[in-house]
Amino acid sequence: MNKLSKIIVSLMASFALSFSAFAGELTVTGSAKATYSTLSGDVTGDNTIGIANELKFAASGELDNGFTWDYFMELDPDGTAEGGSALNDDTSFAVTTPYGVVKACASECGLGAHGAFSQNAYAWITDTAYAEGKTEPVNISSYSSMQYHTPADLLPFSTVFKAAYAPSGSKVLQSANKSNTAKSATISNTTQYRVTTVPMDGLELNASYSEQDGGDVSGATDEQKSESGTVVVEYAVGSFKIGAGKSWIAPQIANVTGSGATTVEHTKNTDISLAFAVNDDLSVSYSQEKSDRSMTTSTTVTYEQKTKSLQAAYTMGGMTLALARTDYDNVAYAQDTNATENLFAVTMAF
Image (spheres, rainbow, N blue to C red):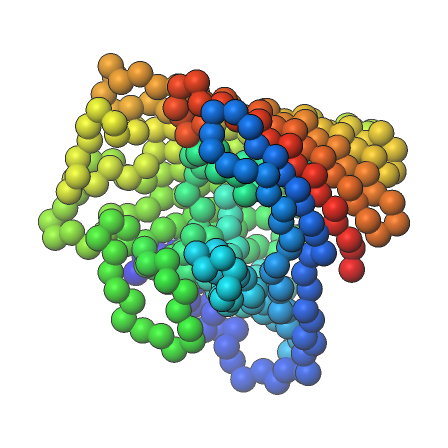
């Protein structure tokens, strides 16, 4: 157990004293959204109609000492069964105190800053359904983790520091009181940190870093340790918002497999996004994401994966209409494999 995990466990234990809790509240939320997408180019696929199909069950309450708690769980369809069966996943349990927030999360609570650059009118386009193959930094939300977040008003410039530790490389979502999780042969644990600060009005800076230790291989020392880092700058002035980010991803190269001509040594992502609010109802945006890979063998040729998205969103009453046109170059880093997607979305607020 490393130092970070010991600190978080100690905080959890200190908050688990005999406090009485007032009656909590339970809410159910979701999105009333329908989408239509068309795909063309050098990829296989067909026009698709999608309807939001997830529900979020959330509960919250207050302890008699002023601490608050919140819990949520999502009900999602199982994609491998054509949505025919549902899964309980994306779970979080948090206690908020004057000294910060302590959390336990499963498949949730990611601390990666790599999506913070997005100012898109509709959505961060490489985080939607179409799999363009872009490599992103490791995020703690892929595992079950325990976390600590500092209070929002503790540090200057509204600086918030977050730390998370996932003790296992397993991605199985365990229920309460489960024990003896099977060891992973590749990843034993993951640690992630994130810092957010606002040094001046309109300017926000984000940075995150994650690292992973090797798995259960006797006497093994990885050829390369898994590490990821991101820095993002966001600035808003008048009707304009801009975000720019840089990420570096060094994947694990396990000594049980070793490196070869097709082994990625590291990936570098450069992302930028610009939005303009035409008026209170209409906003437009443009974003560009570039991803470059370097291989362990210098003679291996690589190709830049590039995504460009033009989006618009219009709100009237409780309804939002959004349109996104996106061009993908070198999908999955394959030369001259290009695609164009047109996505139309209707969302109702409730």
